[in-house]
Amino acid sequence: MLSWSTIIAAGLAISGAQATPVEVPRQATPTVYLAGDSTMAKTGNGLMGWGEYLSTYITLPVVNKAISGRSARSYTNEGRFAEIESLVKRDDIVVIEFGHNDGGSPNSANDNGRSDCPGTGNEVCYSGKTGEVVYTFNKYVQDAARSFIAKGARVIISSQTPNNMWEGGSYNDSPSRFVAYAAAAAQNVGNGASYVDHFAAVGAMYKRLGNEATNALYPQDHTHTSPKGADLVAQAFVQAVNIELNGPTPLKDYLKQPVPEVF
Image (cartoon, rainbow, N blue to C red; front, side, top):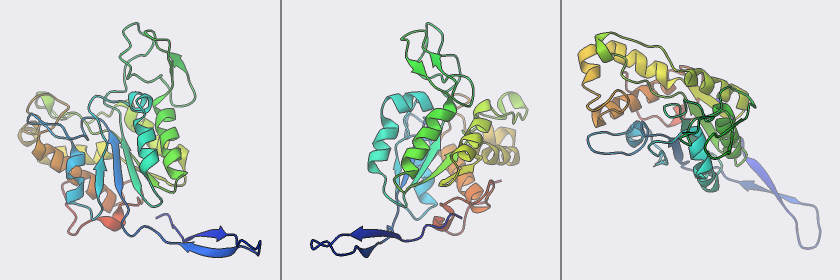
């Protein structure tokens, strides 16, 4: 667990005397901000994203800034990461989870404004529709994470949730490339960032639930869950945090007891 010691601020006396240290206290109650797509967002019409249930299982307030249909690229371009950056304070926690809308090629004349440039580094593409410079998933996520950390916040980069792994009646836990990309992003950012393999946690839960029970959580398509499914996906996330599936995260200290065990 990262250690967040007291920051010392120096105040200069009007007389020009030597600076006197002043303690700046930690936040008594940090806020958790969520950045993601529809699988995390508040939706409706029989569907719901898991971010709406996270507050059930943690002791901190949650501000769900996830928006349906967004990718790391479009979330950046719409200024949504910048909005969170303007809000976060020291000790706040930001969970970033994208991947469902990040695939495809931006080079196409039909570029949808969401596809990231292929690669995991500083590769650059150009939109075949607008000529916009397009960066990689990792660059968008890492730049956002670093902007939050620079303000004293802590970041959890979470891999995307899986689609229905029992679609068609057989279990398929093959991850998209963005799962590995998210893990790499957290590693690249380093101090202040941690990683949760939400894909693996939910996948293990679905394997335990089995074919019929998992399919019942997807009333309309293979990506978006019912409210019951969203609640279970949130439980898988907090269980992964609790058991430190991918190492410690700043959320563990704020889990309500007992912590769910769904996988």
